[in-house]
Length: 65
Image (cartoon, rainbow, N blue to C red):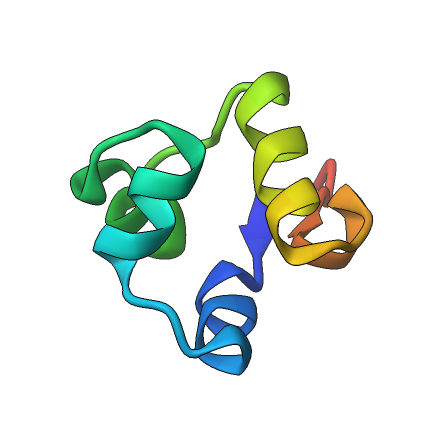
């Protein structure tokens, strides 16, 4: 799954550590999501969207191919 988490985080001017504290995961989890090495749970995806006040689809892009 592709994502624009790093872009959203940069627009909000927050660090990986600040974002991880806000959504209750480790900084390493945020890093892994941004690098495409980890797909978040649905719950975490919702938490991230709520944090940035956007839709999940604004951050995460599913390409079945």
